[in-house]
Length: 60
Image 1 (cartoon, rainbow, N blue to C red):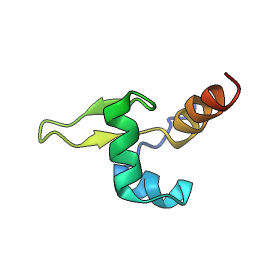
Image 2: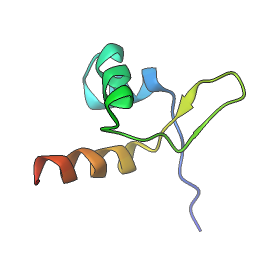
Image 3: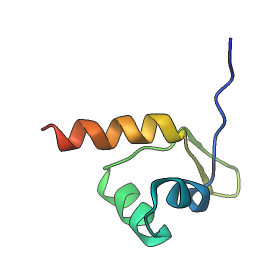
Image 4: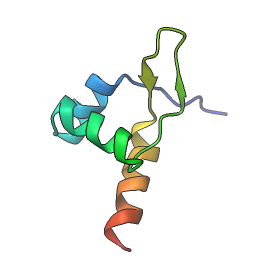
């Protein structure tokens, strides 16, 4: 089974061509969810899952 790569919020912002602040707003609003949070409080995301979350919102 292929293990999915998890990325930081900065890497996610680059992959989605949005600002880091946009990622922060989406997290605060509950628009996107992280896979987990590190002991230091940093989020880790699956790019594909975040894209799915955003697509679901577009179709509502």
